[in-house]
Length: 53
Image 1: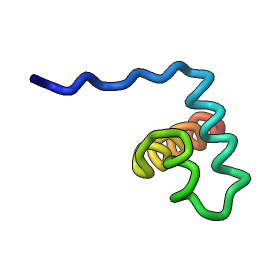
Image 2: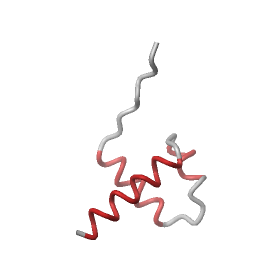
Image 3: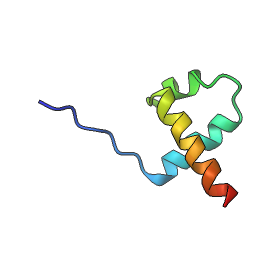
Image 4: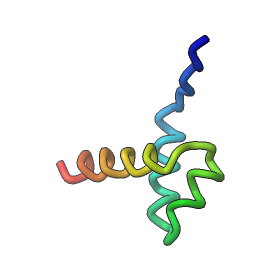
């Protein structure tokens, strides 16, 4: 059986990015939120690119 992917709403994504801006250690926050570090880094890049436009 395939593992079902988790779906996060837009508010959760924005909140995780905002929380990451205030943290020095990015490895702790994803553990607290239950997501992978790579996913958080990807979201940060996406939001930074979107805000720059």
